[in-house]
Image (cartoon, rainbow, N blue to C red; front, side):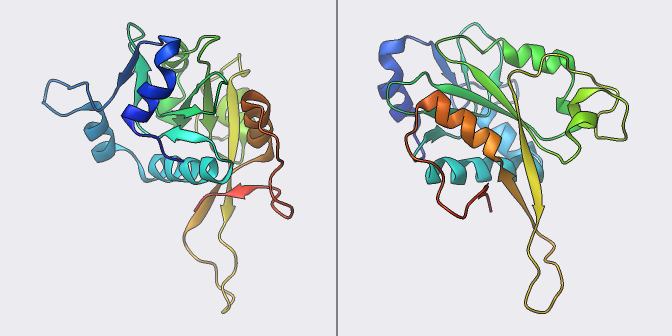
Length: 203
């Protein structure tokens, strides 16, 4: 379920998190943070955000899919997930090597706290060379992020073969069982994914 700004404020008012919304913060050029991101974000980032909305819808997780942060933290996440009385969860999507710097990771981690933790969603097949050991031809082989406890991997699937035997050009981004397991435990979700769905696909 997609949550509005007012939905989030209503649900989380008793927690006194000091939430700040990207739609309320203006840059020097007069655009809000949300407006800037929508105009400048990459296709990959946008697709991953859309897939996350779809994924949360299938799991009955409330999602605010816009920039959101906390007063005094000077960073914003890409989304906030909410379920009943469980601690809300900030989500930051890392969809490019430029976002994978230790400085950016540290800045975003400032949002995290026990009452509202943050998790990163990182995409790519070659997980180790993407964020791990810096010894492979990955997106960011020169970047090593030692502490991976808050990083969850997404995957990428080729679109299935068409009836004519040629591959569609569009790819599908998926959220893996590891992410499902984490969300199920964090939000205490009772039901497993539907039978026959080892991964829940985005679009």
